[in-house]
Length: 434
Image 1 (cartoon, rainbow, N blue to C red):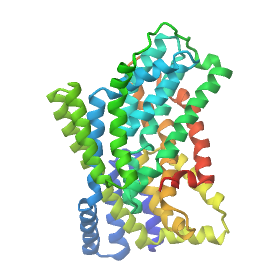
Image 2 (image 1 turned 135 degrees about the vertical axis):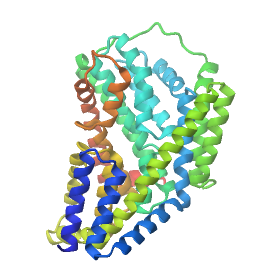
Image 3 (image 1 turned 120 degrees about the vertical axis):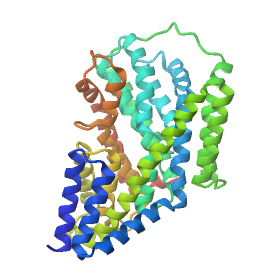
Image 4 (image 1 turned 90 degrees about the vertical axis):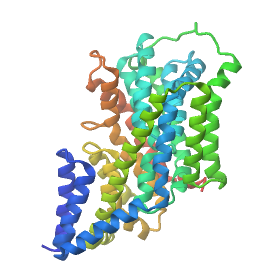
């Protein structure tokens, strides 16, 4: 077989193995290793490339952002800052139809800016927001759909694990990726709020709920005590990166320290919770390092097979326009999103399209934002919408089925798709802060 044929078979084999339940890094690394061995008929070369891939991943200085931001997010989550932000947002939106849904989106956007995890957001706000919405007669589908839709903000608003993974695959600055995610993340949050207002106005039966006017207003001191710690942490981390005072790694270290100080001052975290955060940080860091290592050898395998160049020549030969290429890319991500998680999509698809994007003189930073937003739609689509599964398992309510979660999330997936096409048409929205 030719290298091209081996490369094509390897990509199909990787998708098949992942869909069959094989651990993603194992599928990527194993198939790539065997493919290189077959293409060069040299076991030693394949072994040496694997060694280089491991070294490049583990020794990369910017890799330190992953444990630091992960630890910061876990500390913030365990310190209860998400609940505090939600309480303030709920008070502000209480007189609006669908107000608790809007409050959930706003709180999720702020929470995402200090956790970077869609799974953490889905878990926290399923416990905090859904019971309150159901108690106020909101449609259960709408309640879980709001949480599912807004939870994906954790993957686009920095610090985001997916932006970090993309930065390694595309060899881009983590700090630049974080800054590029700010405006698209805010756009998506605003679009969600507008969609909730629209649904409350024109499809009130889907939203349900009643306006509650008997909640006491918080005093300015109470509002400050609940919001200033989180806003201060966001300012330190993103402000440090934006001004250039801190690199991404330094911002992660500073943010982790500030989050720990906040938790200690508030006395909101036990020694056991701190130890659990350390252990979970180690587990997540090891898993992502394994992913990046596997993606590194996968990229080398694709380069040896010549698949990216073949794709570029194919599209160039058919005189494919910019929008035709982007539409193909989005459709591919949407299809894979029904089968795979976000990290898998980034690791499999991005190395194939990077040379094509560079040849078209498009920004790889902008392309990263498009990739993450497109892949994140997969978190809301069946059969493998991870956020939807997390919500279903967290809520533990037999009255709400997995189908209800997916149907509730569907309008928000559509909103994400609209925002995605706006970001494709106007790259400046992703690059304005750089």
